[in-house]
Length: 423
Image 1 (spheres, one colour):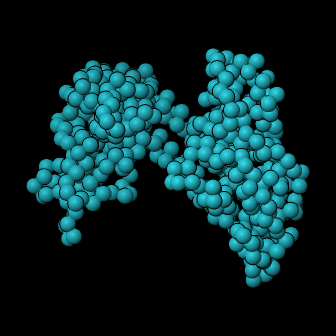
Image 2 (cartoon, rainbow, N blue to C red):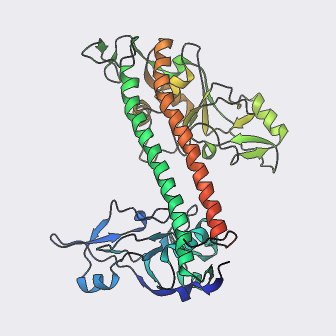
Image 3 (cartoon, rainbow, N blue to C red):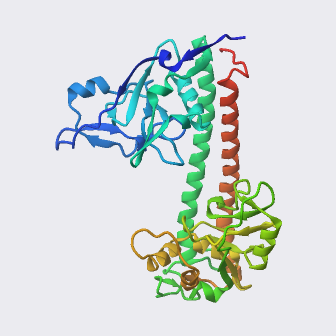
């Protein structure tokens, strides 16, 4: 079995140095400067949108970032995302980083990628919360105090490298899964643009003005067979959930909020529990969605949409609207329209000022959309889009499994619970 040692973090570090924000760039001379916005939550640098600044050469030479260095976020963060994120520099970088970031060179006795994962594990497990310091409008990470913590690691550097290699492989699988999901979503966006503005004819072809008749409408050119209607004209019920928040319980029935809404359903694990008495009161007030209802977030984060297709007993708060279409219109078809550009066009009409926080039921009822009243065409459109949704759903499940696998690996490998043998 490989031997492990307990070492203070400050003793595995060769040196640290603060970054440099520099000055406004000169016309012909500038330096690239990484910021916290270039940090990802999984230790990789996002090299897009790098700031251009002027950093004198004498300073830049001392603070240039090299392959293998770690960058630690010292300031930034928020209530939901503490400061202290860390990323690994996978190549020599011609620039530096801002003064809100610490450049860290790990002693050559240790594998810097292993130390990255140790830092990441501490960050995501909440162990850095005690090192957060709130100042006016910003959260600081007490990095020097953190360096007094102990690190548990294999004495043999090759074992450290092997552990880092395993975790890097898991990261790459996660990255590929995320790219695939993003690709499917781009495909869906493009397809929605065509299907929800032009539709599909009885031969399965997307209409075009070269082959089909179109007409003008308040929302632009649409197929001549289509109509522009308000939501209140195509729904038999448009309302929202409870306007009071029942007391939370350890056990009981669930009540859904905007924060609990995911792409296709609620995250029932994050939902608040309420008593059976409060649940029954809210059911009597029509705060319970029925199977086939469309749920639309209207407060806070506006525009989350899915069709409620579960037999799950749940009630909802007023931050979520319930839309119940008439038999003439498919719930899924209307939900796609609510996810389309038309929803944003409608939203603009009801914006007062720049900080839109909520939209009221009376305005939701007035929203207009171009609609096919042909149920067969609605189904054809939904079939195309549902196929991509299925791909997104399956890959999202795969991504969740990969993330759970990585979390388990980090816990086992970085604690020595599972032994790793060097190749």
